[in-house]
Length: 543
Image (cartoon, rainbow, N blue to C red):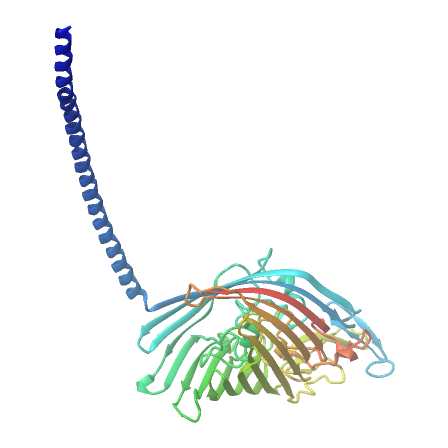
């Protein structure tokens, strides 16, 4: 028993030491493990620091490279535009006589009793023309380059097409000269065509010549979408590069020489002379029957005594020499004479009226024709029912298709006039803009604006009245691109035509209400619309 007690006591004394030794061994192992883990963590941390340092170097190198690229390409500015558009078109054609090369319309006792005269005319009853829904895509790409300090090149490529078509046929019709023959030189990119990206304009400008306020520009000129047509387009006015949209809306190949003096009493004042080639006649020879046409050239003088954001006044004089008898690429056969145009334009902005700003404008213009005796010739009539057809035709705003006028009679010059006025109220808080416009053209009014952004025909060349109202809503958001802008435009146009031949200088304008299905003296080449309307919606995005 004593021996058990002694052994038990000795066991109690030895056991804590053993346990302590065992615990000390585990602790040392744990410390060793932790030390190993710490070393591993140190290695990982070192590795991470190395990677972070490498990454910093890569980022720094990338930033330096990006800065270098930006510096290298800072001379080039890239931008563009996209537009979706949908229109609903409806027009009414009155009764009339239509020219037809195979027709033989008989008129007994004309031009005197006992005689019968045949005309190349066919009676057409009144009818409606409409396209309930037609949609479009338009894309433009801008590239502007700074070459020298005072030398720049500006260019724009454009594509404009109808959904589901590679032609203008859904909106072409046979109603107006500026649309009936489709796209042509000067309207490419402005009327629907196909999905090919073509050069709209490309020109070079040399500014501050010899350290004077003189500039010179040459190339495919920016002579479209000028003031005040930019107001309803919700675009900035072009500035000294543009021309007045009331007289010219056409992409010309030409040049400009301008002068912009610094006159305190006339802020922004400038004057410029413009020249453009509208048609090149090509080779002329002395071979009988060869081409005898002349080049068609346009010259203009534009004076802006005041050119600021809140007030703009412009005076314009334009002359078209040797105007062609058909479109430049359509087989010109002769020149019909000359046309002068004169215009004055005033635009003002009144700030902070109610909820926003009010833009007002008025533009007045006059045209004067100087016809020669050349005609757009046609086999037009045969007297006394014979088989020999006499050539009649159409001159510069006069006819020569009547037996009583045959021989180049009636080719006097004519004066026309036009007025164009409008207003747009801009609500600042909501980005909403509401506009109204009206224009009227007289019987002999003629302008040169076939590239206008109107589907039926250029409204500013209308002989009669055009009413237009629209609402523009800017889309909210913070622009990311330099030229970032997006808006929706809903509008309505109503045309009330009084005379035939809007936007056409060939033939005598006739009062539409006087046309009928019995008198071939009123024979028309194109169907005379009495009225037309266009309800349109666009989504415009600039970048």
